[in-house]
Amino acid sequence: MIVSKRFLLVAALAAQSVVAAGAWAAAAGNLEELLEQTKNARAIQAKANAAREREFLALRDEQSKLVAEAVAQRDAAEARSQALSAQYDQNELRTNELQTMLDNRLGSLGELFGVVRQVSGDVSSVVFQSMISAQFPGRDEFFTTLAKSKELPSINKLEQLWYEMQREMTESGQVARFKTGIVGADGSSIESDVVRIGGFIAMSDGEYLNYLPSVKTLSLLPRPPPGWMVGLAKEVQAAQSGYVEAAIDPSRGVLLSLYVQRPGWIERIENGELVNYVILLVGGIGAICAIYQFFYLLRVRFAVSRQLRNLDRPNSDNPLGRVLGTFRGDAEQAEEEAEVVELRISEAVLREVPLLERFQPFLRLAVAAGPLLGLVGTVVGMIITFQSITESGSSDPRLMAHGIGTAMIATVLGLGIAVPLLFANAGLASLSRTLVQTLDEQSTGLLAERLERARDGGGGGGRHA
Image (tube, rainbow, N blue to C red):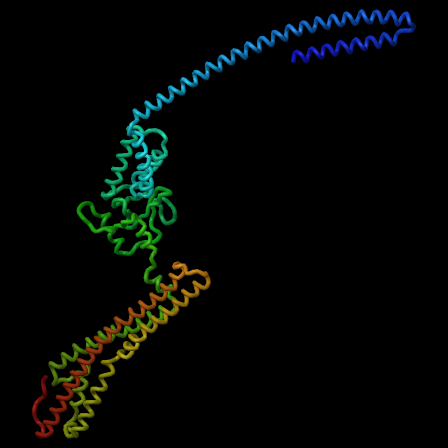
């Protein structure tokens, strides 16, 4: 910068001298004036040169001084750099010595730190999903923080780690009762008393609960479980001591959630198309007929048993009494031929048989139609399954589940009405055969008695069984 300033100054002075010489040359009017001007110009030029020389010497001395100062600063910087480099080497050696000393003093603590981090990471996932966290919230945050820590854990954290792991194991084997907020079906929070069986299942007011790790709270199941499970839950909540029967989910809520999502019989029937309703209609009609005929035959059997104890006085409220009443007519009846009497007996018995064997043909028809209707439902279910495969273009089991379920429930319903109606029909047939046999025995005995009396010329009393 100083050299450039000097050159600028010299250039400026030279320009001024040239301008002055030009001005004098322009002002001269003759040779004498021009000579005088030239002489004066030389004197001026000499003075200017002298001034420039002095200026240059002054700038040279200043430049030398600046160069000396720059050299001194460079030497000082080099000396400081050497000193810092030596200090850096000493610090690096000291750092290595201290690191070696730290590693030696840590010993197995480094391995312990790794184990602590690994255990904390494993336990954090368990605690995060555990139902016990609903009673003791915030534990998973401690394990997560400890698993991500870059520093050696303090003795307090190690003790807390041991305590939380021990508490998880201890609470898993205990039945606890506590008060907490529960998410209801409408999403609102309800403060309620909760009974927790280990980390497996929780219940409140006879309803089972599911733990939501994302919101760290318990919630009601989307659908109520079967009635027997609700009864067990109420008994557990009402118990204060001793042993009671309870339902336990070893999967900690997974199986219970799947269990309550299973459709009930009504839902299965509704998903089974029209065939299921036809099967139920046939089965219902058959069941009504079987029950009605069963009580009718019981009443007839009691009435016939009562009539057997008093054959001399026929009663028209039972088949035997009506058969006996056929032969309690006028005296002309005794003179009838044996063939006519036998026909009258057969007519009286046959008149009673249809009522005794009533509904049995329909029950046999229902027994045969039940499996056939179930087969129809099976075919319908298979058609639905193949339609699902055709529409989706894949054989995803979830797509085929509806059709397969329809087929299976129809088969079950068909067999379900056939088997009970088969036993009902067999029972009714046995009761009706017993009564018909009683009528045949008594009517045949009555016929033999009448023929004997006709051959002996009358007389004799009534016949008793």
